[in-house]
Length: 350
Ligand code: NAI
Ligand code: MG
Image (cartoon, rainbow, N blue to C red; front, side):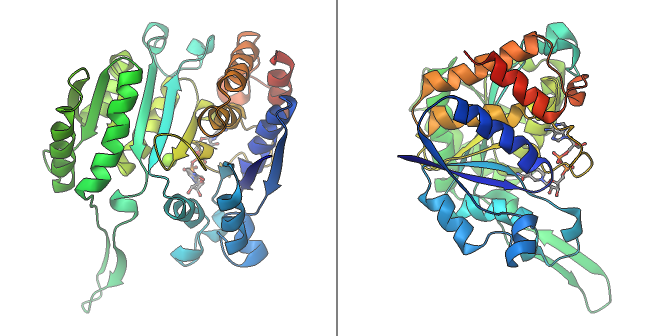
């Protein structure tokens, strides 16, 4: 029996996750679902954004479908109680250092893309983001000096083992795609990035067939808009990957379209799958959220953790068909509600 943990979280998290679950259920794959609270929902219910019982459910499951965490009512809490700590805690506890964020323009979404149609049509890339290190996990502080001025800091660091293990995934992925790998860093000013670049270059000797390029992150942000078709696999750190993938999402039409997989190895046992967006408090509870990113995350779950590539392809084809038939939530310029969009995908499932 295969168990999927459903950690729906806050805001639009539960709204989009329920649509992804409906699509998984419609496939008749003999899946069992186990729900557990996470984020602000868990803080209000149990006093902690990642209660031990929730972590147990996540660890026991064959894969995790995650919604989003974040609740404005928690903004003034001490950091360890903030909802966002739950997703960082899960990534750390499960060793999820590989984050795959495919970005591609779905048929018919040229009008929703922030780019010109002929530019948008070229987008077909994977942003490979390191997920267990960098400035998010370094030492942090917020303090008031004796003279009364406040100071905040977050240490950015990577060691070579951390860079090597994600870079290996990058080269392996490039081999399975177009043999093109673009490593994005800021080696002109950051020592963390210099180490990153050195390790990637050393490793490239093992992958002579892969054409490796390097790009500074500020240039990469510009190139993503100017000519996204030049990218195939982008390999980058935690912070840069976070920012660049939100940006890539608008090139494909909406942040509500992009799924992600977080894995502990190249193969995806016990992976966590989530839309790249957050809890969107501005539209929560209004039925406006686009569930496609969550639904496509479920497809990634089938492909990477459950070795069900055909079922994954069925979901992707259904999303595609629904979009071609004109199904659109407001972020894509339409009027459908979240559940109507879910209905449209279900109706297109063959
Ligand atoms: P966000 O991704 O939640 O929202 C950004 C903008 O995109 C908003 O205008 C929102 O309405 C829109 N949007 C997001 N998802 C959408 C969807 N499926 N359909 C239509 N429109 C959508 O990012 P924001 O506003 O910066 O953060 C809100 C909360 O989410 C914060 O507490 C943040 O920390 C948290 N967050 C959590 C993440 C996670 O759980 N992995 C990731 C990113 C943010
Ligand atoms: Mg983000």
